[in-house]
Length: 134
Image (cartoon, rainbow, N blue to C red; front, top):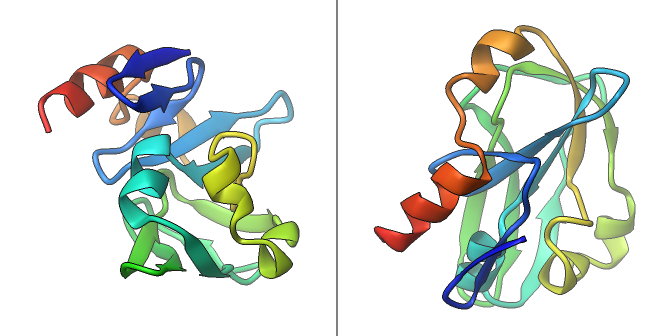
């Protein structure tokens, strides 16, 4: 874990400049969530509109929306792929993301072009440096 001020950056994940993370699993699927920075900026999360299983997204498209007491924020797909699973626990308990944004993923994608798209994302060290510049 890398700490940047009050924010935690989990190592072993890939990050976007929009503060999503992607974790590649052994079976080649990718878990997607939002970073500690994103959840702290949002404040108390009240609702998450989960994507539909079976829906496909291109990298950078809106995957879902997260509503907090402060704002409604869009979560973008860090990689292209098809949604094969969503974290249904978040329907009843969206605040789980505030408790641990790296443990509580939003969706699992079956990626289309993973190797190429991962090159465009930041590793934990690069993301930590990006946060220091904000």
